[in-house]
Image 1 (tube, rainbow, N blue to C red):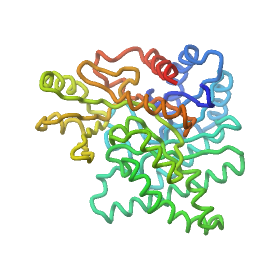
Image 2 (cartoon, rainbow, N blue to C red; image 1 turned 180 degrees about the vertical axis):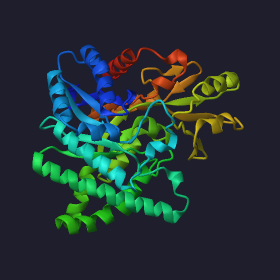
Image 3 (tube, rainbow, N blue to C red; image 1 turned 90 degrees about the vertical axis):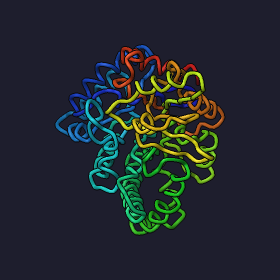
Image 4 (spheres, rainbow, N blue to C red; image 1 turned 180 degrees about the horizontal axis):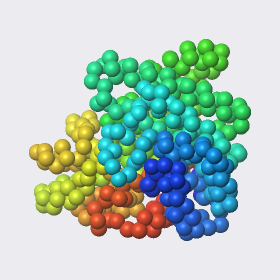
Length: 397
């Protein structure tokens, strides 16, 4: 839905099953119409569309894309943002680090992303800008040496620059500005703002200057401007809170380096605050969030630096001498407390406060995808929960 200051607010449909196009559309049809009726009855409602590679391939078959465009129009819906991070199935089977596979060093990831952008260019209404969030290049621990890591950075940059060229041509042909939004997260090759800035300065920009000189005969400044226009950042509030970064500090870094924020994903991590009184109860409640589907990295700040544990079981089995931990879980954003546990909802509120004076991105997408694996006492009807999240965020804008 469109809010004041031209914000477009939605939720990410990766919350629904989406193994193939039939499954994806049935899930959207089942949930979205009722949600729109409650939160956006008298105006168009935008979708944060998530398509797996298989669903995207099948959307191109027959009349599927044409029929979907008609269905969107008939129901006063539109697509302005997509989630291109998970390539395969995202529900009912082990995902863990495979959420990054195939990564940006591969043709499969490149071809998938280019297809999504072609489809978005067909779906998005004229005059709107649109974006697709994507993996932060690769999973850090798949690359064991400095040489392998450098190769991953270079290969990822080259593939992303090919997407930037596609987006330049799409805007020339259609007038629609589309951008690819890189999404840093714990244990991704890009985890925080400093690593994002390094990727631009050491890889994207220098490699891109030579690439766009050859491809489009641009000079160095023109090439850098093109790169930073079409390759942007997805600011996932949960992920940056896990990096212990304050929104104002991160946004200031990006602005100082002309890095655009293409999309803000509104999400909350678990925050675990220990005390001498309730620690055993806290550990017991935290253990209820241990499940086998997704990676739940845990971070803590030690001597001014962020330490990351690659998954929750490592912490549950550890020495337990912590003051504060934060866990990658995408918990419901409308709750500040879960029994003895907390959330990083405060980072959402700080982000919304910042947007009041500096609207750095007009795309707001709620991303709470862990409903199926939450402890039983937090589960509610899915559509009711999504409506509650959207209404909570609207009330804080």
